[in-house]
Length: 352
Image (cartoon, rainbow, N blue to C red; front, side, top):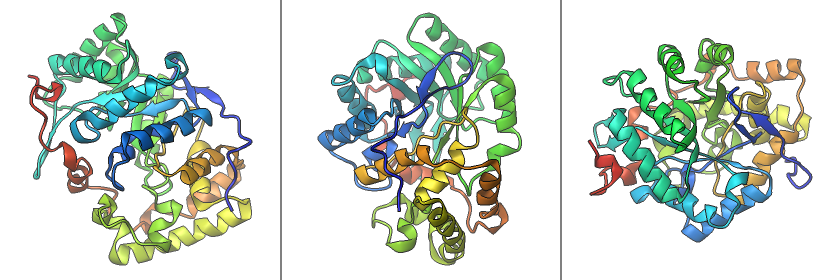
């Protein structure tokens, strides 16, 4: 049983303490351009995103690296031609410069940051980006230099707020000292909780919002990997948690959540997502899907109400030391963006 989205009014909340207001649930756009399944057509992608918007989701997350030749940003740009810009909170990212068969190269020079921002503005067809993330941290460039350039672009009106993705505590502190950071994007779900010990407390101390990606465990708690087979071309086939003996062991964790979901009158995906939502109003998950039914299910999670004790019991049902298989690895990252292995000529990714 799944909680319906038809009667839900999507709340608005503050993301960070700099003034950005977003829908309580965001939408991760990466999957529309492939990775977990075949990419949707432009028409299908726009239909999906419109459905999310009309159901109350206004916070959309993309990146310059998603899809063939910037396909994801171009898709969002087409969408924005048909929806009111001032009703949408748009996040995009830069910093993954090149993906090859044996390594991922990141780039955070001020010049590259600016060229990426200009490129994203053009592809998205907008005058400003609400939230501009450093997608991965270039450890060869002082984070202060990168953020100083982003600060200039805030002053110029090109971006409104600055975010970090996959950053450690030291990087967050140093970046925040140059210009207030509005959001930290990290993987966070029932079975991926490394950020709880240090990063979440630090973000709360500094007034930084938390944006979990893969909040349903890369779909694991949706049950498809348990009850069906993964799509043949899915990158999840390379994820250790979804294969062989590990999957058999992890099924025990799924079964526990499924039993709890029945008690709460919702689906396993909704309970897993509700658990993330109940970590605080400053935690704004961005689940992604290419399926309308799954979208409605995700939205329905906002209606699932849990007590503090129930949140604790659900978390305890998935002990981290019982999760079989590593979270993710660089090989999966490379395959995830397999269509972006070679930067197009004359693109902002090849800028120095």
